[in-house]
Length: 225
Image (cartoon, rainbow, N blue to C red; front, side, top):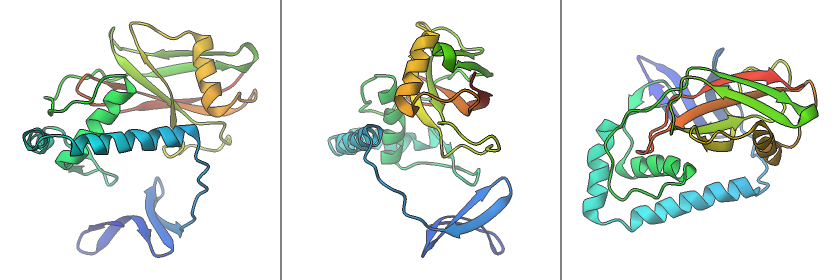
């Protein structure tokens, strides 16, 4: 349970008893806690395996190596769910940066890196053509040799606008070798299934640099044709 205190409690996030506290565009809210199903999909199992690998990797570092991560935390501040800047622990920083490097097929860093410049996507445009099995996509203002992570939702209702908890990674690529429209469609269909014509779908993009830092994500939605 995460609580932010002011003169009185102003916001909360997490579980307490049988309830969940969170915040959306309408403000703070509380709902009954429900235990989701755990279907053990290949993607879930892969994510857990990576976390286990990272945890074991941290345990295998020397104390001097762990110290480099603890000393670097102030150089890699993160923004929490309340929009406040905070520092991760040394272990948290090791897991955070190396998890992103894993996505772009780079080996785990044993010593903490220095912060590096990162390209931020300006806009994202996509055209989902179910009839021709193509997913045309353009992420603007990215230089060559930039690693891009694409996330998407499955089909959502037409009135849906908040999808942060529904986005799932379906494609990672480097701008020096752009994937074809048919390859993007196949990657999406493998993760979510083939959408029906007229479906509303959100797509999000962010970049990762060699230090494992990720840019802010941009997102948009479209209707499949």
